[in-house]
Picture 1: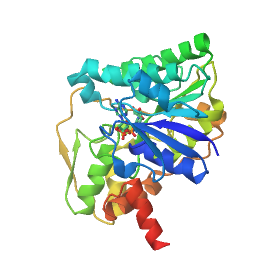
Picture 2: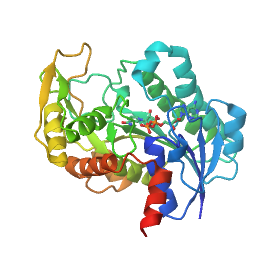
Picture 3: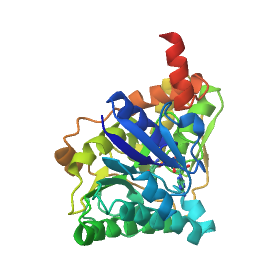
Picture 4: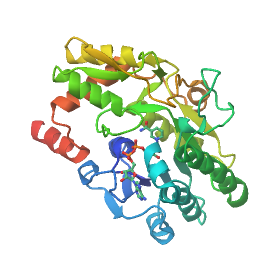
Length: 321
Ligand SMILES: NC(=O)c1ccc[n+]([C@@H]2O[C@H](COP(=O)([O-])OP(=O)(O)OC[C@H]3O[C@@H](n4cnc5c(N)ncnc54)[C@H](O)[C@@H]3O)[C@@H](O)[C@H]2O)c1
């Protein structure tokens, strides 16, 4: 029974990781400032250190006695990076250095969330890990900075790390305002109530939607793959889904007709994003990812249950058993 530190453990991906660690019999310490995360997502029985991941002393204390750290805390918003460039930089990059610095003393392995945003707009698809990095946002630039600092962590300080470049993660407990797959929550919500959905442009733009359980599998396997070489892997499915196809699949999952309307295209939107999952599958021994429809069924069921957080979901399950 090992103790793990999960930064951002009250957020969307962090709460799913927490549930998986607990199911495995591990203990959990969560560091979260609850800015976008919620106490209702805190795994019952987990220790909470409430505060800022860029607070070096706090992170050092939180790192005491842990077997590994999953670092997910970040301001996961391109828009926030535009409005508050320095503030988001402090959380997204300084916060990561604070985590790696705290891991120094006992060389605690760190598995951290990077992002497909490091790639920007790529002409060659699917995107492999060695594609040129051309971030188009402060958020993407800071995630690339995390990867560079992980190299320093390994080469200078001997800290094993693994970076995971998540593509468009989706699943229950995702905030509909998420820039990644908030569209899924919004489409599910509207279509299940019989309301139309709006796509920008022709709706032929594609994304690589990866179900949160597959992201958790990569995080868990990643702890064993962390090394001083600071490897970085894509976490994606290798399947492209157009926004129109997404709308139709969600309508089918909700059992309603797809009422899809079109609005003018959004300026600067990336047309296609598709990752190559081969390296991660080989290195982490991952199985076939969930089909889009399987994941969507889970999101629809979660919406029907009234969007419970992890804590409320556990309480509901306990009542039923
Ligand atoms: N969701 C995706 O599709 C996606 C894609 C690529 C990368 N990522 C990355 O995965 C990680 C998790 O994302 P998510 O979708 O679960 O987002 P989320 O917003 O649900 O979770 C982030 C968590 O970090 C916490 N946090 C934010 N600032 C903090 C601070 N200063 N100190 C301590 N805690 C803080 C929030 O309260 C929240 O609980 C992030 O690093 C994000 O950049 C997510």
